[in-house]
Image 1 (cartoon, rainbow, N blue to C red):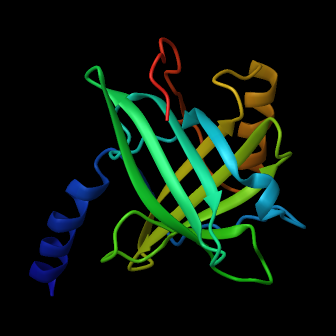
Image 2: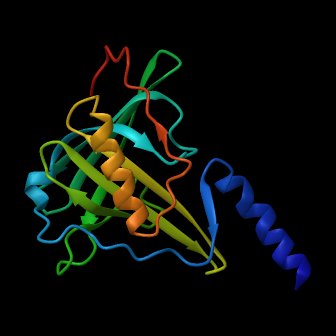
Amino acid sequence: MKFSLALGFAFILPLIRAQVPHWGPCPDPAVQTAFNLKQFMGRWFEIAKLPAQFEKGRCIETNFTLKTDNSIRVVSSEILKAELRKIEGTGVVEDIKNPAKLGISYSYVLPYSPYWILSTDYVNVVLVYSCTDILRIFHVDFAWILGRTRSMPEATVQIAMDTFAKNNIDVSRMIPSKQQGCDKTL
C-alpha cells in the first residue's frame, strides 16, 4: 500500500509542480448568478493568474465563440520565445441550470476541466476558477483574472482577489500576467 501511494505521488507531483496544490478537496465557490453565455463570448486578456505549467509565455489571451451546436470554440494564445502559439479547444455548459459552470478541453482524449465563472460584468472583468481533486486528499487549482483590455486598474484587481478569498480560494501566489509588447494578436 505504501509503495503504491508513493508511486502515485511520484507520478502526480511532476504534473502539479508549477500548479498550486492544497490539502483537502476543492472548495465549492459561488458562481455568477444569471450568467449570460452570449455576453461572455469574445476576446479576454489574462491580467493575473495562479501559476500554471501550461502557461509559460506572455500576452496570453483567449477568444470564446459560440458555435451552432451551443458548444464554445476556445482559442487561447501566448507569445513564447518570440513565437505566437495557439491552441484550440471546446467548451461546454456542464449544467444547464447553472450555466456559469463551464467545462473546457483542449484534447479529444481528455475530459473537460472545470472553468467556472465566479463573477463578471461582461465588459471589463471576469474571474475564473478551476479545481481538480486528487483522490480527495489534495486539490490543484487555477484562478484567472481576465479583462477585455490588456491592463486593469489595480483597485479592480484587488477587488477580484478579495472575491476569490471570500470564496476560500487561496490567491496568495497569484502573479500578474505580462501583457507588454504584444504586437502579435489572435
